[in-house]
Image (cartoon, rainbow, N blue to C red; front, side, top):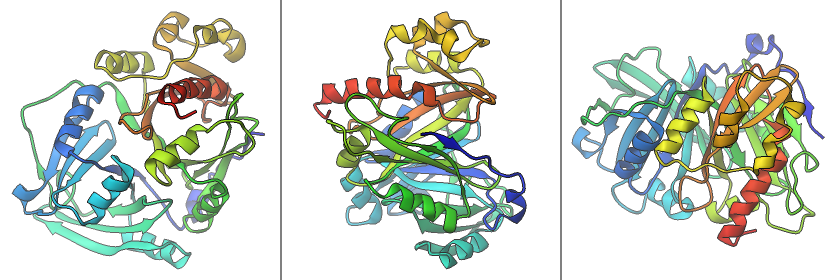
Length: 376
């Protein structure tokens, strides 16, 4: 059964790990130049910075894309036999780094490692003519890491080692604003372990719990818990499969093809989901679709909303309401050939939850895609 607890406004005052927001999300990919073209063309990101052989970086090439407050890094290795190439060989294209913007990277690293986090990179200062950035990283689920980024003494385009770049190709943005939340998939029996990690090591609070009664269909089920930092800027839902159903859940499928735990989807916010989804669909982004009957009793289920139902029905946008208001959301199909990473487009109109009322319709839609892949 779903439970919810408010994140206290007092938490931020005593928070030993204050976080200002998501700094960037880094993907390890097989071909960063081509991946960057996809995210620029399909999702409307702009290329703002680059690091690679031309800038003195010999082992990789990295393209930094931005839209609103969202920054993505797409990184590809130049040679085999390193952490980047090993990650791609095992997982395919996927998220390696969930970077957190902090005021003190060294203190963040010390606080978390002293509480049991495994260090990935000790605090390191990176400098160029624009100042300095301090960076440190810790391990989280699977091969994913959290990087603490302290940039208060830096005025450059992104980070030292990167140069501003303009290759003459620009696209219109689609109205994406910021990262709303990032969802991780972990193995059966590991969800509570990672919830405890975020509570004990990073000082997060348990915000929501969904059990297999909340998130289930005729065929499969999953469990999910949402953790949030003190000020609520960072939210990490964590999913695990649930036992007892007769088919493979979407989490099982992810774990099989990603070959372990990792980031399942990235939810990005917009102020106008109808315009954003319309633009994305016109550029070839594919979305999951629920049956048209979903909209027949929509207003009876969620109450009055500002939007006309006709464009929501046409685009397949889902609506759900909680005690604070309502939200509109839609999920892309996986953005790679492996059925792993996808994106959620979300517009919040007061609601602070995650669309519990849409779970059944959404997961039945995912199962239809699984069946087409022969993985249900």
